[in-house]
Image (cartoon, rainbow, N blue to C red; front, side, top):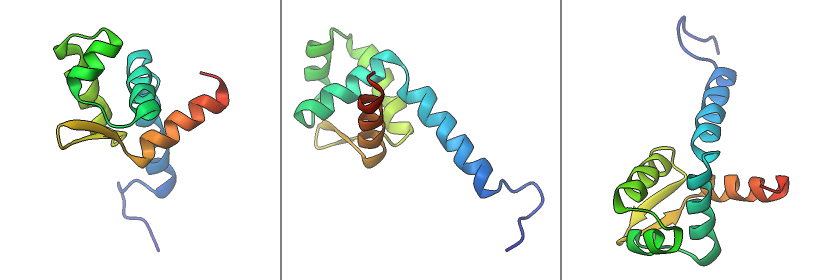
Length: 97
């Protein structure tokens, strides 16, 4: 199938997705949030604030970035990892970060 002029090809889409995931997922606090949720399951924002020493504003900001990148989602008053978040967390563990 031919690509339309100005339409990003699959390779460009994949590169852009990788860039966004890397930028969001490589932030140290966001990685800590992912690890915290990944270690013991869904967490309420208040739990994340207490465990990670974050203000509500900081937690809300970082969680919005993680949710926007489809690494996590808020559901039932708690934040859960999505498959992309699990994958990013597992990849970080393989690299020793």
